[in-house]
Image (cartoon, rainbow over all chains, first blue to last red; front, side, top):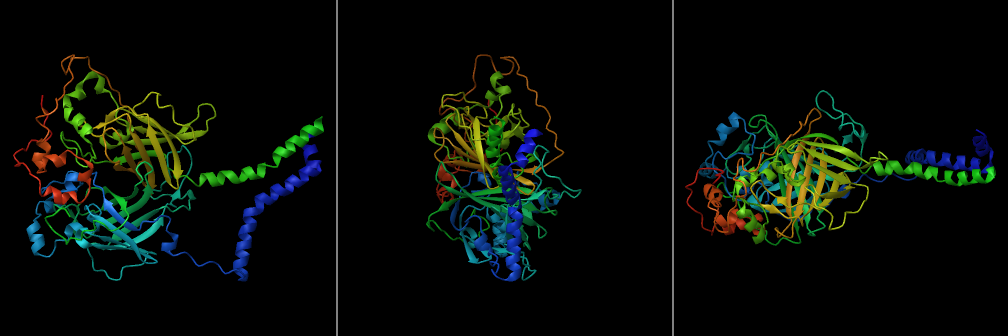
Length: 290
Length: 296
């Protein structure tokens, strides 16, 4: 107690308390200054960054598939009824058993296996670039398809379903995450929705939600998804220090209550290329792997 | 004397406000990966002779071809755990991630992964400690150190024992280094492994798996007991195929209409261009319908 009194009473301690108080108030002062500046109009707020400017990672460039998973389903056209890794329900199995590639080709449905839920699994090359400041575009050489990722949550221009559907994109990584150490993860409400614990403003991957899909195939051999299907994809890119490669990974989650018992997870991996060498556009083909 | 002591304390106190600024900055670098996770794993690579998609070299292929399925029944292999990079792929892989605490200070020094089948565990140290000497013992789950890159926990594992890349004998050497990235996407957890193995692979081998958050999951104990030597496999023998003598090696390729050479892996086979090449290769008539043949 004697020591505490001595500290508080001394000149040095008064200076210390002043500095400590300033440090504690610093964030609030800076914040207030910021608001004040905005109110007074002295320093006009910077315009919000476009999605292109806000991109935490650069996905653009040419990429080539590296098929290390589900090889025989991707590098070959699998046999009819070979859907070992797809959680098909009985209705989905029935539809898969009717697959007829010649019929698809003849009826103009040869692109059924190049639609958004499958195209990242089709071996080939990607060209990713910004079509404009809020639209990221992916061209594929396999099937010569184009995917457009729309930032800003805008609604589709038309309700007409298409092979690539309508994709809404956002930079993610700032989920509401409960960070209580050792408590076994985030808290959820009765519907399974995360209850915010703390917001982390560190977007570092691209999330894409695709709807308005024209019914097609999850695999080349006619394993179906319906027009009710939705596709969630997470795109991430990172360097591999050992090999010097830059990887692009795409995790796809297909939800389809009509044909799937549960969500289908697939992964696709791409290696960055220095240029467009090897770019080999092909038309959609119902009976070819790419 | 007392006055001098107070002045010393005052100097120390000047740094306290600066310390107040530190924790918020450090905490921002982490996503919550702790808890119970239910696997969404697809066990491909289950057939003898299915090395598809693996950038295997000739030495790796030779080792893989010599593997006999009865090796699983040797006493020393019955309770042998998969290293965690394999175990998360090929086994019943419910996953639990918990903080790893220093036993003395109770400060978190990393993360501990626990997998259901055979209960392999892996500790990932994030406290900056160095890897041990190259001559230190190798373990099933090796030695791992990691750091956060944004919301991704990135860690490197070495000091691994020799093990398998698949359940059908494709080898991974003790010289391997595995780079792992754990990333949480909402309620999904993705783990990406990039395996570099100078002994058996010509290129990095990338694999990825997903889990769904499952707070109610209970991972049961996995008791395992070896049966005495000679109970299943004759004592003193190690089932194997000598080079060129594996009579079931091409059954997988034949069954699925794959050129025999293509089914045996290699970096070239993982790229789209290989599809064209396969069309020029010979495919055996598809006479086999028996899947996963275990020859005695």
